[in-house]
Amino acid sequence: MLSSFDPARSRTIALEAARRLASLIDAEGRFLYRYDTFSGAAVDDYNLTRHVGAVWATAITARRLAARELLAPLNRAMGWLIDSHAQVPAKLGLPVIAEGTGVELGCMALGLLALLEVHRAEANPGYLDLARRFADYIVSQAEPSGEFHHRLLLSSLTPSDHRARYATAQSILALAELAAETGEQRYLDCALESESALARKDFGVREHGHWVLYAINALAAVAPDAGHRAHAGRVARAILVYPLYRDDGLSNPLSCNSEALAAYLALLRRAVPEAGTIDSSGEAPGEPMVRRALEENLSLLLDYRLADGGFVEGEGRPEVQIDHIQHAMSAYLGHALLYGSP
Image (cartoon, rainbow, N blue to C red; front, side):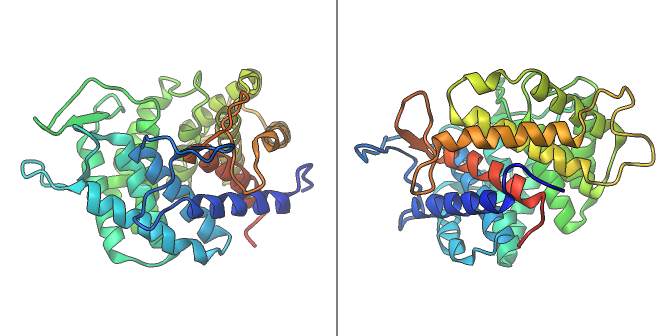
């Protein structure tokens, strides 16, 4: 199949972005989280969810593009996180990542994914065991609605009413990936029940949920379901029909929607469940339309790319934040992997 955006170029861009992210990890294991590209001045701010997200995405790139030199800084970043922020509240009995006064579900989910991907790149039984314990915490936060409690207050070990935009889909993704790795049914069951409930509500369709498409594609690798695929088709169709994110002048909306389209294309290439097709209404977009939109996005995203492999935020602002690089890297990697690993 021909591509109008060279997959080899996507591999190069993804690898250079991964190397840039790894270079931002200091000797302690923290990222240079945000900085001005003109002055080099760092912004005194940090976000643990983005820390583990950057480790996760970089570890995938290191594994899929055979860049083992990235593993040492990634292990350093995971070591800092565990040493500085992991704790086991006595009344909870499970390890958690403490951030401020609470435990953020999205941070736990991406922390699980980071542990799992670094383990996949270089076997580490300790990381895999901790990933299982994080999964036990995530399962404990599941609600009958298919949602999860998004924040646990450390002082009382009770959930707050805080809702994070991406935490639920990130949790489904984490449980699906761990189930694929270990074969443990309880994690898969929780993920499947959540996605089935959310699909009936069109969860993430209006929001162009890229984490939703990541999650459905991961579930399809172990337990394909026609209803889930139809849900994915509705998310992808919304991205194609309403491409207003291209007018934002920011790199992250372009990157995240590109990640979504790449994940949907990967899903399209999986076998269709016997119980049905991807969308019986015929409204789910097909590969040519989706691939064209993805490659148009990747071309537009080049305007935000720096010579060192990083990506700026946009709108004339010279700042780089680690998630700007992470999402752009993942978008190009997702495109490259549609054409096979080297």
